[in-house]
Image (cartoon, rainbow, N blue to C red; front, side, top):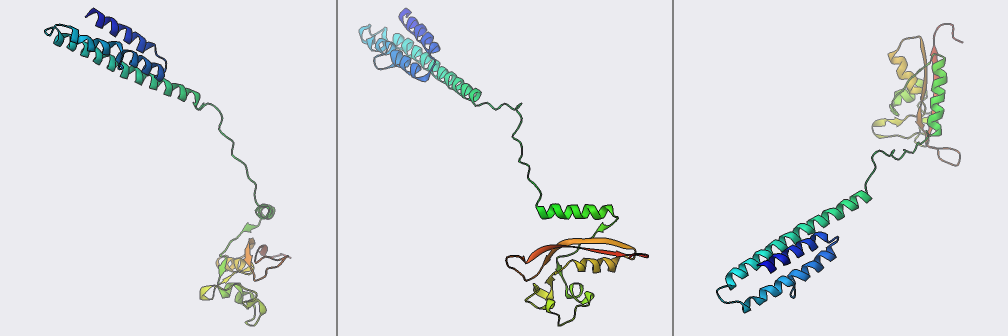
Length: 219
């Protein structure tokens, strides 16, 4: 009985002192392996009187259970410690400033339109807007464009379903504004316009800014 307790005490102390899984498995083999101290003690039961064997075997098996439980606890402790070290090494310092966002710039056309609008705002003009897909009346007829004018042809204008067109200028904005507002009127009409024209110096989509000022004593 005393030898069993001595082996258990030595094994528990050795398990607790293991700093990694390899050392722990070596200690396990030393006490619980095929040639381990507790295993050898179990084999020696054959030399005991038959009446003493059951009690001695029970004590050895109980000791074996204590060591196996201690081994499992130490495995978990080492695993937790390894994970803690890894987390500490990979820890994110939330107090550090974040990565700065790249600051982009406005497109030159957008910047130009904004400068034009700001200039005319300072002169008292409002900025008007309108649809880019227009009907024939607002894009042509209201501007006294004849039915046979080349601008109405498909070689100059983009037509879509229902007789609608992609506006060829921002003049329709002025027409629509005059339909809903009485003089005095003082607006500019910036926006994208479209024409069937594409070469080295022309784009089928470009920008226009038109102005309209209706009032008394305006020259």
